Length: 65
Image 1 (cartoon, rainbow, N blue to C red):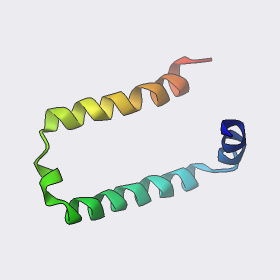
Image 2: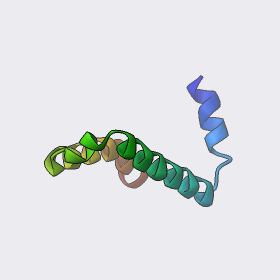
Image 3: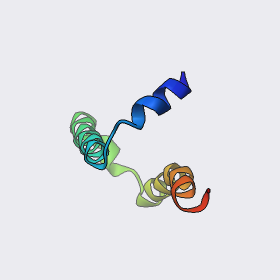
Image 4: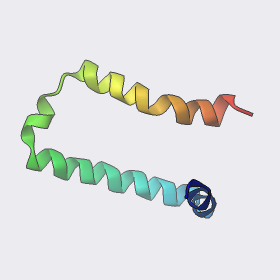
């Protein structure tokens, strides 16, 4: 399953990936509008989650050969 997904993702350009990120950003805004209590999350928690989600992609892109 993942091999097939990897083959499909290779067809995407930088522009496609940027558009996906934009779509996720706007979907997140909609979710926060539906559940306003989510905007009260501590910034430290958000920072830890951001770092945890970005470690593997950054490693794969910059360090792994």
